[in-house]
Image (cartoon, rainbow, N blue to C red; front, top):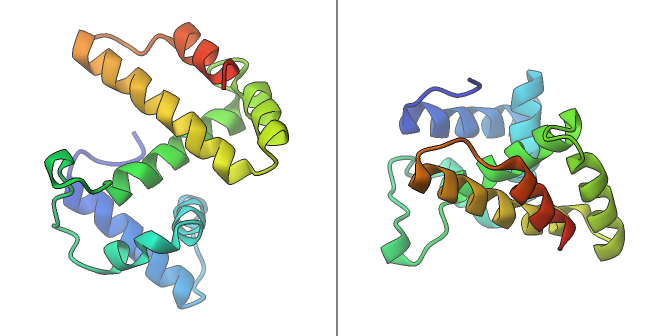
Length: 138
Protein backbone atom coordinates (compact mmCIF):
# COMPACT_ATOMS: atom_id res chain seq x y z
CA UNK A 1 0.00 0.00 0.00
CA UNK A 2 1.40 3.37 -0.99
CA UNK A 3 -0.31 5.30 1.76
CA UNK A 4 -1.29 4.40 5.28
CA UNK A 5 -4.83 4.35 6.55
CA UNK A 6 -4.43 7.61 8.47
CA UNK A 7 -6.03 10.59 6.74
CA UNK A 8 -3.70 13.01 8.50
CA UNK A 9 -0.58 11.16 7.33
CA UNK A 10 -1.86 11.06 3.78
CA UNK A 11 -2.64 14.77 3.73
CA UNK A 12 0.69 15.57 5.33
CA UNK A 13 2.39 13.62 2.53
CA UNK A 14 0.68 15.90 0.00
CA UNK A 15 1.64 19.03 1.93
CA UNK A 16 5.25 17.90 2.35
CA UNK A 17 5.65 16.97 -1.31
CA UNK A 18 4.19 20.31 -2.37
CA UNK A 19 6.42 22.27 0.00
CA UNK A 20 9.51 20.39 -1.22
CA UNK A 21 8.48 21.14 -4.80
CA UNK A 22 8.01 24.83 -4.01
CA UNK A 23 11.39 24.92 -2.26
CA UNK A 24 12.94 23.28 -5.34
CA UNK A 25 14.04 20.36 -3.21
CA UNK A 26 14.89 16.89 -4.43
CA UNK A 27 11.71 14.84 -4.64
CA UNK A 28 11.32 11.12 -4.36
CA UNK A 29 9.43 9.63 -7.34
CA UNK A 30 6.12 9.44 -5.45
CA UNK A 31 6.58 12.99 -4.17
CA UNK A 32 7.17 14.17 -7.74
CA UNK A 33 3.94 12.49 -8.85
CA UNK A 34 2.01 14.11 -6.00
CA UNK A 35 3.56 17.52 -6.70
CA UNK A 36 2.61 17.24 -10.37
CA UNK A 37 -1.01 16.47 -9.54
CA UNK A 38 -1.09 19.42 -7.13
CA UNK A 39 0.52 21.63 -9.79
CA UNK A 40 -2.25 20.59 -12.18
CA UNK A 41 -4.86 21.76 -9.64
CA UNK A 42 -4.16 25.34 -8.58
CA UNK A 43 -7.65 25.48 -7.07
CA UNK A 44 -6.41 23.01 -4.41
CA UNK A 45 -3.17 24.75 -3.45
CA UNK A 46 -4.82 26.49 -0.50
CA UNK A 47 -6.24 23.20 0.80
CA UNK A 48 -2.85 21.49 0.57
CA UNK A 49 -1.13 24.29 2.45
CA UNK A 50 -4.01 25.00 4.83
CA UNK A 51 -5.93 23.14 7.52
CA UNK A 52 -5.17 19.49 6.82
CA UNK A 53 -7.88 18.41 9.27
CA UNK A 54 -10.68 20.11 7.35
CA UNK A 55 -13.61 17.84 6.51
CA UNK A 56 -14.87 17.90 2.95
CA UNK A 57 -18.29 16.34 3.40
CA UNK A 58 -20.66 15.59 0.58
CA UNK A 59 -23.30 17.40 2.58
CA UNK A 60 -21.11 20.51 2.56
CA UNK A 61 -21.17 20.49 -1.23
CA UNK A 62 -17.40 20.69 -1.57
CA UNK A 63 -15.17 18.36 -3.52
CA UNK A 64 -12.55 16.67 -1.36
CA UNK A 65 -9.34 17.83 -3.04
CA UNK A 66 -7.28 15.02 -1.54
CA UNK A 67 -9.69 12.38 -2.81
CA UNK A 68 -9.78 14.04 -6.22
CA UNK A 69 -5.99 14.19 -6.50
CA UNK A 70 -5.69 10.64 -5.16
CA UNK A 71 -7.96 9.44 -7.94
CA UNK A 72 -5.71 11.21 -10.45
CA UNK A 73 -2.72 9.37 -8.98
CA UNK A 74 -4.65 6.11 -9.20
CA UNK A 75 -5.55 6.63 -12.86
CA UNK A 76 -1.97 7.62 -13.70
CA UNK A 77 -0.67 4.48 -12.00
CA UNK A 78 -3.19 2.33 -13.86
CA UNK A 79 -2.24 3.87 -17.20
CA UNK A 80 1.50 3.54 -16.48
CA UNK A 81 1.16 -0.15 -15.60
CA UNK A 82 -1.70 -0.94 -18.01
CA UNK A 83 -3.61 -2.46 -15.14
CA UNK A 84 -6.34 -3.35 -15.74
CA UNK A 85 -5.17 -4.57 -19.13
CA UNK A 86 -6.40 -2.23 -21.83
CA UNK A 87 -6.59 0.95 -19.76
CA UNK A 88 -3.55 2.51 -21.43
CA UNK A 89 -5.09 2.29 -24.87
CA UNK A 90 -8.44 3.51 -23.49
CA UNK A 91 -6.67 6.53 -22.00
CA UNK A 92 -4.70 7.24 -25.17
CA UNK A 93 -7.85 7.07 -27.28
CA UNK A 94 -9.79 9.33 -24.94
CA UNK A 95 -6.94 11.86 -24.62
CA UNK A 96 -6.60 12.00 -28.42
CA UNK A 97 -10.36 12.41 -28.84
CA UNK A 98 -10.56 15.22 -26.25
CA UNK A 99 -7.18 16.76 -27.06
CA UNK A 100 -6.25 17.19 -23.39
CA UNK A 101 -4.79 14.45 -21.19
CA UNK A 102 -5.81 16.16 -17.96
CA UNK A 103 -9.43 16.47 -19.04
CA UNK A 104 -9.32 12.82 -20.12
CA UNK A 105 -8.12 11.89 -16.62
CA UNK A 106 -11.03 13.82 -15.12
CA UNK A 107 -13.48 11.78 -17.16
CA UNK A 108 -11.68 8.60 -16.16
CA UNK A 109 -11.67 9.40 -12.44
CA UNK A 110 -15.45 9.66 -12.53
CA UNK A 111 -15.54 6.05 -13.79
CA UNK A 112 -12.93 4.96 -11.24
CA UNK A 113 -14.82 6.59 -8.36
CA UNK A 114 -18.03 4.90 -9.47
CA UNK A 115 -16.30 1.49 -9.73
CA UNK A 116 -14.79 1.91 -6.25
CA UNK A 117 -18.09 3.07 -4.76
CA UNK A 118 -19.94 0.08 -6.24
CA UNK A 119 -17.27 -2.33 -5.01
CA UNK A 120 -17.38 -0.88 -1.52
CA UNK A 121 -21.18 -0.96 -1.44
CA UNK A 122 -21.20 -4.61 -2.55
CA UNK A 123 -18.20 -5.56 -0.39
CA UNK A 124 -16.20 -6.99 -3.29
CA UNK A 125 -13.29 -6.13 -5.55
CA UNK A 126 -13.98 -3.63 -8.36
CA UNK A 127 -15.23 -5.19 -11.58
CA UNK A 128 -12.44 -4.40 -14.03
CA UNK A 129 -14.44 -5.35 -17.13
CA UNK A 130 -17.31 -3.03 -16.28
CA UNK A 131 -14.81 -0.28 -15.42
CA UNK A 132 -13.00 -0.70 -18.75
CA UNK A 133 -16.26 -0.76 -20.67
CA UNK A 134 -17.32 2.51 -19.07
CA UNK A 135 -13.96 4.01 -20.01
CA UNK A 136 -14.32 2.88 -23.61
CA UNK A 137 -17.75 4.52 -23.79
CA UNK A 138 -16.39 7.95 -22.84
